[in-house]
Structure formats: C-alpha cells, structure tokens
Amino acid sequence: MKKLSFLIFAAAAITLALPAAAQFAKPEDAVKYRKNALFVMQQNFARVAAMAGGKAPFDAKVAADSAAVADFVSKLPWAAFGEGTDKGDTKAKPEIWMDKAKFDEYAQKMQGEMSKLNAAAKTGNIDSIKAAVGSVGGSCKTCHDAFRM
Figure (cartoon, helix red, strand yellow):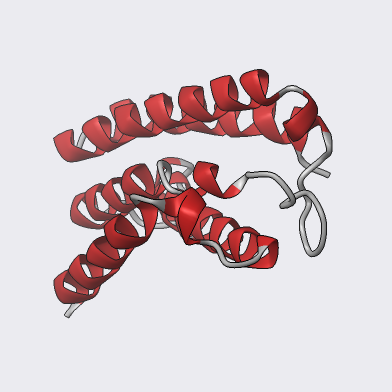
C-alpha cells in the first residue's frame, strides 16, 4: 500500500511539475502548490532527521524511502515562485524576487544536499545519514534565514 501511494504521488508530482509555471491559473494556486510540496518534503526529511538524532528508532528502509521522497519533492516547489506569488498566505520574503539568483542558488544547494542524503540513506549507514542530515538542515536554515519570514 505504501509503495502504491508513493507511486501515485510520484506520478502526480511529475505530471504537475513539468510545466509548473504554466499550470497555475492564479497566483494563489502557485502558493498552495509550493507550500504543499515543501510540507511533503519537510515531513519526509523530518522522519529521517528524527532517526539520525536518536528521537525515533532507526529503520533503514523507512529512512531510505523517506529520503527518496524528500529528494524527489525537493525539485518541485521552485517553479511556483513566479511573478505575483509574493502575496497572500505565504511566508516568502520579498527578497526572493529582489534577489532571485541567490534564492535559486540556495534552492539548488539544498537539492544537492537532499540528493546526498538520499544516497546516504540507501546505504543504511546511520553515520552517513547523520552527516547528510546535518548538511541538509544547514542548507534549509541558510535559505530560511534569508528568504522566509
């Protein structure tokens, strides 16, 4: 059941992500899309981070599955930071649109670190996972400090 749910989610995400910028009828739709993608990524990353921090029992399969989802979803929200999506129910700072190059750089850095976490989780080695979790967390914090209210 878990695999089926993941496959359905992955297929939907791929379908939605390909022409993401063109798919939003309204700016509010883009905001909702990116918030949901970031939420799914955060939930899966948090599951791995809890194991790495000793707050949850380590389960190599769950860690690998969660890291794979977080890695995949880490590529989705960025197309939804288009023109007009700086208003409404969002914690995005105006600096995103004033320094888009820096924002994109931080997003790419986080995606790279998330991919490293995915690779580490596939090994099942908790020490490798711990190191990768720290790097992902650091990249998230850097971006949040600069671009999130």
